[in-house]
Amino acid sequence: MRIGVVTFPGSLDDRDAQRAVRLAGGEAVALWHGDEDLRGVDAVILPGGFSYGDYLRCGAIARFAPAMRAIIERAHAGMPVLGICNGFQILCESHLLPGALTRNDHLHFVCRDQRLRIESNATAWTSDYAVGQEIVIPLKNGEGGFVADERTLDELEGEGRVIARYVGVNPNGSRRDIAGISNAAGNVVGLMPHPEHAVEELTGPTTDGLGFFTSVLTALVAGRS
Amino acid sequence: MPRVVVDVMLKPEILDPQGRAVLGAFARLGVGGVSDVRQGKRFEITIDGDLTEDRLAEIHRMAEELLSNPVIESYDLRVEP
Image 1 (spheres, helix red, strand yellow):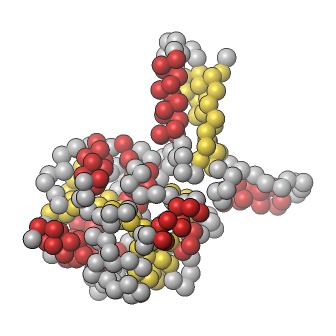
Image 2 (tube, chains in turn red, green):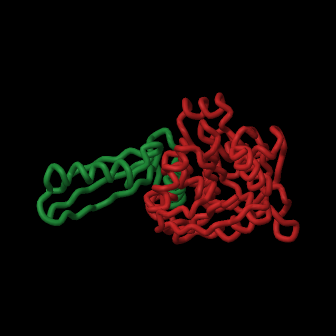
Image 3 (cartoon, chains in turn purple, blue):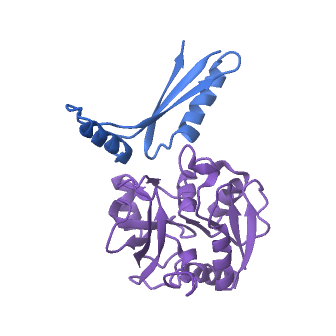
């Protein structure tokens, strides 16, 4: 299974995401933001970082990259897409996911190992977790506060589209402790913390993040059989 | 050359921690009687040639799709004389 990882100018975690894909057993394919050709990938990861310097708003300029045109079209057709941190911001700016990510309520950049509770395993990226399972993965953001109007928040919760919540501490002022959400179909997922930094004992606090990358391989195999 | 100014502000219901930090600085600098500060962005767009209705419509579209995020922000657009 070919999992594309898009590199934007200012992406930081593209290599880590590629490595996580390989450790999960997939083939990582480097994609370039300026190239509309998705090189026959089966799924796409938008990695963390500061695309286009976070100028204007985080993700606001990346949304219009040629690669994003192709990804948005394929996402509407069901291709799995995971946006991590800056990738989550790009997915919101692209309107593939509702809401927006705003500056942390305490104004500080936060970098910590964060406990999360998986709230839904009915998505392409979370099927290998159990609902209620708690995981610890790194979180690092300056603008990670998830906001949406009350109606949208109710809708997300009512439809089971909150995929993970912060446990213990809400690190950035996200409404209703939301750390990640999915679209209605479950193929598009945005997550503020970084599962790709928790895939190896040597470098991560845990290997709890690996499940996101194995889940999508499971989903793709199921889709083909 | 005609100039279009677009002001972008967070919607009132969205928390503005930057504005709140500025408000805190007001207090620390001994400036009282200020109940709130909201921080926004101002774009000054200089147009080559005449500002036709089509060009203005285009700038409106940019204000809506690029300069602001309608989920959290509103914008105000005006043409400077």
